[in-house]
Length: 245
Image (cartoon, rainbow, N blue to C red):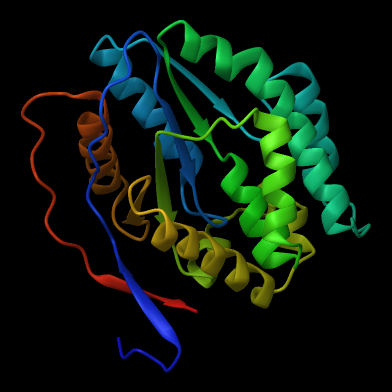
């Protein structure tokens, strides 16, 4: 793919290695645009870790708690009624606050690995890059909601917008598929990729158009490196994707 003026590139990447943190679990998030396969891959990763006898909790955003699931119904239902991006951000962070306090932080403190399908990066991508809110303002909200909690590893499943949206069955379409145009979703995708470029030590970017089994294997390699599994095979270099500046 030719690089247009004003663009930078980020390769699809293998896993990263982090120093171990004694007695504390690791926090793994799975992010990406609509239709990237986050729920499927989160479930597969949970199964993989359980098979290796790793204590693990899997959750999602928004949701994961009684309050969070009620907020999920509010923010995802395709009602056709516009919601202000800042109101969205407050709602997502309210659900996030409850999830961190009730599920994520207690599990990490107990030495359990946590897998979360979506986390704060999604708010930055959707309400920030997509909706036009200040990223600095969103980070301040995030800091309050999470007490500064950040993932140890973020798997970004990258997929072209048209491909991802086409994967969603009509019954599975949320407000974000029914009420926002392609330009919005392209800004969201670009926002995710910009974050990956800015934090290469945290993000692993994978081509979500690959077969599901191949994606799962690459995620297992990345998580294996994070958790210190032995004999983790190296990942060949992936093609590059282009990220507008």
